[in-house]
Image (tube, rainbow, N blue to C red; front, side, top):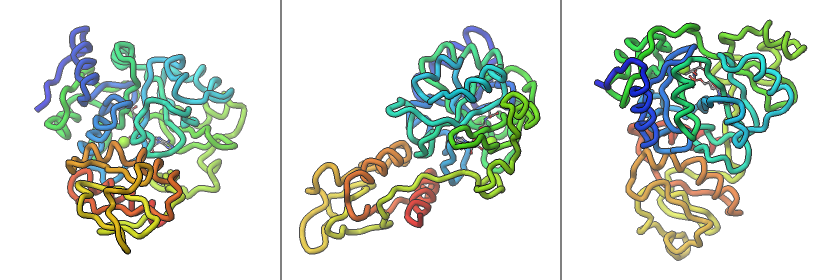
Length: 327
Ligand code: TXA
Ligand code: MG
């Protein structure tokens, strides 16, 4: 069982050290407890998905101490600044275009060109974020299919043996997740109703916002999300390569041949990526979106993907590859 420590200066220092070295800390926010990791550390982010046991890579919210701290990460237009001014720090999440070359892991954004950001109002979350020079990726600190935790005890019962530390600060004030508004399109779209109401949003933006604003998208929450898909077709469970294909390997590619002659290991670098030579599923998850994007730019006619086991994070990796292959 993870240590449960009440918030204090030394507890916050300890949490910061764990996060800097790639660990997971359950943190209080004003909405619900979050399962936090360094958003710039792909392997740490992969552990979030593993602990939640969710067989899918959904994009995560990145938490910052202030609006200023996110300048290098996202494009902040006028509506974003207006909402930020009114509701931050607080329970509102904005989906914004992500800046090129942000240090944030591609796994946090599930390969999408957008990023969900928020400045939490909870004092302990603020004090922790100020100790760090990276944002914290944090979904609710519950395993998949369970309710979001609003007390340290909820976290401990559910995933207490899978995190490195639980920072305890009593029950969450709001007890309901943040409202998610997508500002990356032509009109603001409400992706998830939450603690900030549509009436409040509409009033501040001087624009009516409803769930129907996203009329071009399916309504059920799980389906609202656009998924990243490469332009280049994918061929899954490949055991050899067709001429003209790029290779996304997992484990050794030593014995993989190219039909008609040749070996995969001799392909030029731009046509070859290995998710993890030692078959480490954390490493593979952390590399997945970045490597798909690189191979997508290679000009190959398709991308042959070696088989990835279904256990642990493999299920989420395969889910994403199957979606990309059918796109
Ligand atoms: O109150 C909260 O928001 C809590 C606390 C810990 O901050 N966090 C939370 O995170 O609820 P999570 O991962 O459970 O929910 C994130 C929501 C999901 O509905 C996800 O689909 C959406 O934000 N989301 C994240 N990034 C997105 C993106 N780039 N585009 C669209 N939706 C995104
Ligand atoms: Mg959740």
